[in-house]
Length: 109
Image (cartoon, rainbow, N blue to C red; front, side, top):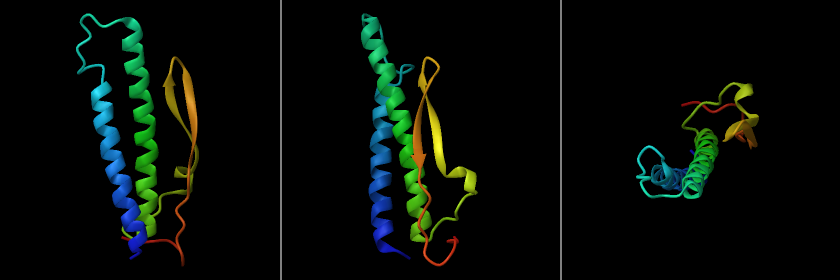
């Protein structure tokens, strides 16, 4: 088991949890918008979208680190590479999903 990958995985999960708390803060269903301007509402929605994209990226990174640590299996090839996430108003943001680097073949649980 790769201890460096485990340490990086722990850090990644902490970042993921922090981002989830931020998303909950900006969640429009839980916010009280009484007396809040439209501009402020849109800013909250944009922040929520950015958090959701970052959560997606961090979840993939956590998976890669778990594979590299030897505690998860690799997924199918189409799971890695370019992906898109909705950015609102019909827009999409492209981001790269890296392939875990595993020495000696695939990792197993």
